[in-house]
Amino acid sequence: MCGIIGARVEGDATPFLLDGLARLEYRGYDSAGIAVRTRDRALTVSRSTRRIDVLREQVDALDRDGLTGVGIGHTRWATHGAVTEANAHPHLDCGRRIGVVHNGIIENADALRTMLSAQGHVFRSDVDSEVIAHLVERTLALEPDLLVAVQVATAHLEGSWAIVVLDALSGRMVAAAERSPLVVARAAAGDFVASDVGAIAAWADTFVALRDGDAVELADAWVWTSGGMIVPPPIPQPSPFAAAALDLGDHADHMAKEIAEQPEVVAGLLDRRAAAVADGRLWTDLGLPGFHRLAVLGCGTSLNAGAVIASMLRSTGRVPTDLIVASEADRAVLAPGTLILAISQSGETADVLRALDRFDGRFPVLALTNNLHSSLARRADAVLDAHAGPEIGVAATKTFTAQVVVGVLAMLSALVTSGRIERRQAQSLVGEMHRLPGLLEGAYQASATRIPLLVTSVSAATGFLFLGRGGALPFATEGALKLKELSYRWAEAYPAGELKHGPLALVTEGTPVVVVDNGEPRLQANIAEVAARGGFVITIGGDDADIPAVGQEAGRRRLRAARSADRLPGLDAWGPLEAVVPLQMLARELALQLGCDVDKPRNLAKSVTVE
Ligand code: F6R
Image (tube, rainbow, N blue to C red; front, side, top):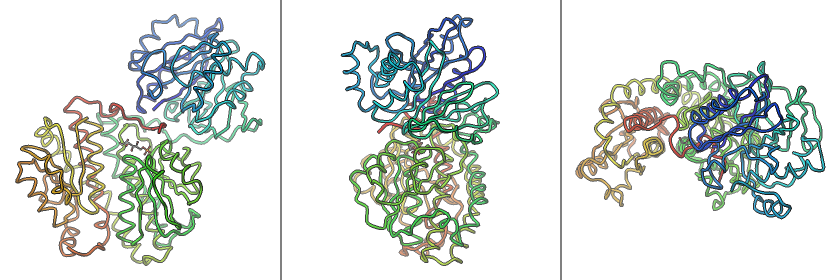
């Protein structure tokens, strides 16, 4: 969603601002803008409702000689107010002295706007963020210190914000945050501020994340305040974005690269975590109380990853689970003894954070996130790092797989600690998980050869069905989500047995129906129902499948033998994780054949910071 960049460098700030904005593009945006201080102490503002490249052309046409090295930039993902240049950031005060970029939501913006308008302030946009510029302007009339003025102004705000305020008169720049991420960094090229470390990865090796209530002046020596008190600046941390992570290598796009990285990501996770599962250390190190029930909280792909983890916990440990769509959490009723597992790759998803507000500290919260500096990580009682590395493609791929593996390992460790499974059983289950990198790689190779041709046969279809049973169902759901968000085609996932209760009406001659075949014998009858109506069945499964990517022939045999058993061993209980690879590749290939941008699908954001 929205992104922030600020720079305080020698020379001209615009190349840094534009490059930073380009690196924020992956979060999704519909307008962008920059404001740079000029030598004659004014602000030059450029905004566009088109791509960063267009903004770059606009900026190239400016008289760059008069610009200084101090500026701010923003990518906006519209929530309040239409996509117009006037609504794009930066926003200015009446005197055009103060420039502001803002992420988050000012909940009392209407009341503040009414109050400020009554005092003579003139608004130029429809967006909540503009009130901040006018509040700072009003405060500066009485208090000349920008750092103090920003603190006074933010004391009037309700909601969430990450802001950077630039004063054209003094050239001072202040950043402040409350429930919205913001980082600052000192690098050889100068000082930077950004909503996402990735935006400044090219210049900064270390960074410091602002905590709620922090305000920082980026000056020769940083002035750091916390809750209004001056405090020493925190020690910078190494940036997780090695420059190499942004390099595409031989891949055509970030999504392709991130799909291909999954075997390596999983191998790395097993190296890091597997040894601490069977003796319970992985769980006990988290310092959480025991639990009788698990409530998984998340949205989109993270919720699907949670469904896989929950499926493992039920089938292997007989632990009851709830799956809570975060935006619907106010209707959830949790039993005593519940542990909340909140899953979010970004750790900034507003629906998840707001759901935790609703549970109000009554249940322990374990966060599973790819961002240890996120709001979610900061407010949870314990944190599991998904360790997927930077994911630049907006659609989640390797973070899904990493979340599943880390979540399953942690839950297995909890099962040992609570005596629900024997240490030896945990050891054998973890042993089976060591097959995963090979299974993922095999699925990748099989899909690379088969998927392009298969997709050509279905690229004209307007809708797709995805089916699965038992442990395969969350993967079918993830496959449908990936396909719709990337290719903009309708896609729905159903438990295969539900098909005959209504959705079969959708199947006509040529309707593509993707079946995640985990060897469940009853799937064959469901496939026959589709075929009888002329549906175009694509099976992702074992050796006899259209895409032979599920490497568990032994498991399939066990499954058949176990027909009515509800307790299945090993990976079969919650897999096939490797099926996600062809599902991701199917969605990507269809999107490419339809001419869609796979790294930046429309209307999708990497970090969804609104409810
Ligand atoms: C799917 C996707 C979204 C996210 C969802 C939750 O590719 O990108 O469905 O999974 O917005 O995001 P996080 O995991 O950041 O909470």
